[in-house]
Length: 271
Length: 302
Image 1: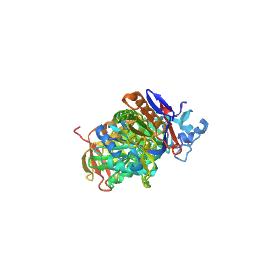
Image 2: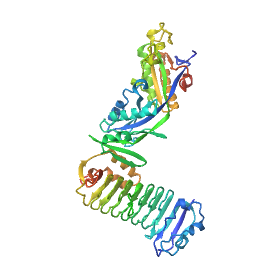
Image 3: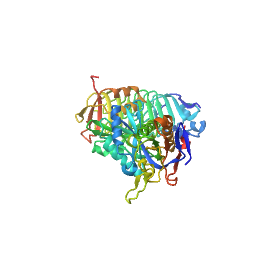
Image 4: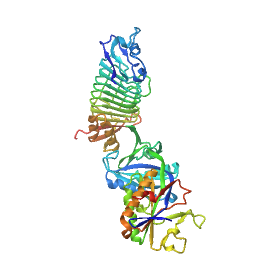
């Protein structure tokens, strides 16, 4: 069966809340019922039928065409199925997602994968700041699942990451993995200054970093079985990130300003 | 006892009586096949019989570097015990003393089961707070810092309650030498059967036992009916021409694995024939009332 296709008619005049458009929420609904779902973020009511041209299909696979950066909360709390967005998305895409696949061919705004617990998010373009991070007031960020960013990512990716894997094939901004609780971050390109800032536990693997905090201690070069296993796991999603793990890596333990049980692996320049 | 003759080898019309056991499996890897074998051999040492060793364990098979979780040479080890708690105790003690200590080793679950046993979850405390937990790809690993780098160990491994222990073959020959040749051929054939092990030295037990003894404190004693030196002195099960008896004990993860292993061993003995190998093959049982699994030799013939 073909997927449910929603094509954006024009760039909306306001930001839209697309969190009701999830496979498990649409299950059993007719085309007319789906068209009546409200997606407004202002007092003026706005329904799916107002902003999208709809082609009914299998609601387990939702295809959004002509995405734009005003489409917020796509895949918010998604539990399974598949959402594919052709184009960009707004903020908090895939927030609190627990399962399924969210694929975005364009770029994502800030807080994509925020508080994610499971499933997979694949962002073809760039990701904004605080990828996987918590919203203000929350104790932990992402705690499961896999996020892949094919382009660059903004500042503070994996802020307060607790579990799960973030893979950035391009570059990452400053403070990658800040305040990390645990989990894994890989950056195939260069990272901005102070990666792993105040991280407690967890693993960050970087091709290079603009500046490493002096509170990270050089533990020497190691060939670890754990990194081989990680390379095989990551290879399923990104050959570029898997290649990074095959390079000679130097381990830095930190952040000694806090607990100091985390680690940053840096690829050595000579190899 | 009625008997069948296959290629000149007499097959007793009897059966091996086997018992249900708890079992688990591990994959031990290292930088070389030799060191993977070394770690596995060490952890399966002194694991011939549950009576005196707490568990029965042996190498199931070697695994090429393309098949192991970390793409290094590995060995699959099976462990059998009479209870889950004893199996857990033996697993933690043996992996902790023999695999954790072996250079370059890593240890993974070798069995998927509905229930699990602690593996890394029991050993992680060796890290004294520096152990690192990693979860990815649906697996949970512990990284324990050790003197040559890190010991990587999966958190848990599977447990099966369908395992069977005590499948056996009694191999009887006209000389000690020909009996050993037949037993060795059988062990070699059984080694190729997956999910089954022969836990005794080189797969062979020369001191087959019976339950009980004339001494109160001894739970098992020599199977006098099969001792060639006691022919005539006791109610012997041996014919005049039998000069030596060797036993192969088989444990398997499933009843089918034990049956396959016994069939493979039997086929190897029959193929060898009575001139070079054994003249007769029997099996040990307790009259059929104790063990739920009966493996009849006549059903297992090639």
